[in-house]
Image (spheres, rainbow, N blue to C red):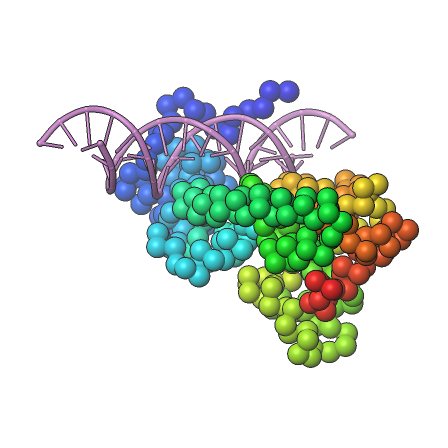
Length: 305
DNA sequence: AAGAAATGCAACCGCATAGTT
DNA sequence: AAACTATGCGGTTGCATTTCT
């Protein structure tokens, strides 16, 4: 079946919108409301396709749209959300009132990607040094040093390329959410976790990673969409003892996969595969133990232990 | 001052998906 | 269940503006 185009393209206006067109669209939407963009385009007398009308309204004409001047706070939030969500611009924009996915996407590509790129280059140099140290330690039978190197630089795993850096942090965030949920915590309407043990000081501390990105319950559940996959009994370990929560956390699969789409190999966190800790040796016999310990550590903010 | 190159941003395009008939 | 429509999303393009030589 040949898909019909969203609108007739012949004779349609394209390119920049004029002030007159903007005015017509604003007036029409104010009277008739949003939606039914095809009829908007037709009835309002705009010689534009439905998509074009929708885009113009959502990105520029809609009330409450902020123009330019991304603040430092917003930039921080964008960076954090991008680490968590990847190129899910609409989701990110949803957390930034008055900002559009298009604007954030452009901002990321033009400004933040460059910043991250320069960061990445620095990190690459650091990783090279680290890899040499790890190799050296392995060759010389000492792993304490290599562990220390990694512990000192937790955020540079897989740095040559932002995706790997982002991936690890995503894993950390998602796993913390999942750990909390699976440990019986609930999330209130403000995105705050409440522990069945009550919200004591310890609870507050490890909630900051979520509250700091202004999440709400639906958002967390969305991010942690497949958390039930991580509950005990559903997992098997990789043969190489590495674990991966979303199978590489592809942007789309992480968010759109139904639980059945995720294989058991995809379900647990990839944890520093280059190090062979004693814990991992234990987990050769009990793979699930690794994940549970990791969750517990996350819950207690004791990941290094 | 003028042309070239780089940059930023608005808009377009194709695909995916939810909803409707 | 299949066909179709409407809408949303992310990637890409193209143009206007700015900066550099």
